[in-house]
Image 1: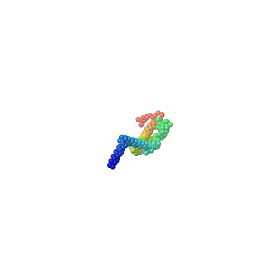
Image 2: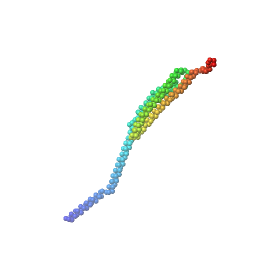
Image 3: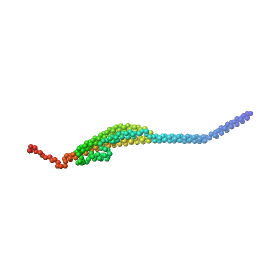
Length: 242
């Protein structure tokens, strides 16, 4: 009986050892390391793909910001202030600004030489009209100066708004549009300065032309007063036989 029990115990022990050996053979260390490396490489590839997708998403967001338009437009404000100075030029009195009418009026009022058929009364009326043209030119120049002074305050406000928009621009397109509007403001100021210069130089030119015409009128009046005959020759007169 004891021999049977001992034999059964030995058989059980042998069976247990065989089972343990079989399990160690199934878990191969080499395969385990290889599988681990494969899993790490796969995880790295997944992380790289995630980073790539994030970079592409950021690139698309940047492109969207760069393509976003600037929700600010100052052109109408610039046109409005520029229209005020253009209106003053259009309202200018006196000699016309168009070349054809100017040439005709200038030849009549500022002749190089008066014809003999022009009466003295007509020369006087022309002198009065020339004086009025000069006065109108000065008035227009002074009105332009006053309007430009007012427009400068508008320009300062526009400049502050544009600088603020430029500094807060979120993309390249918004920054470019803000810069373009800054250039438009600069161009508008340049046009306005040219308009002011035109009116000032026009007033100065009218005064110089008036002076030249006054000289010619004085020469003609003197010529007519002296006449074409023998001029008067003063002679000595003796009083009381002396």
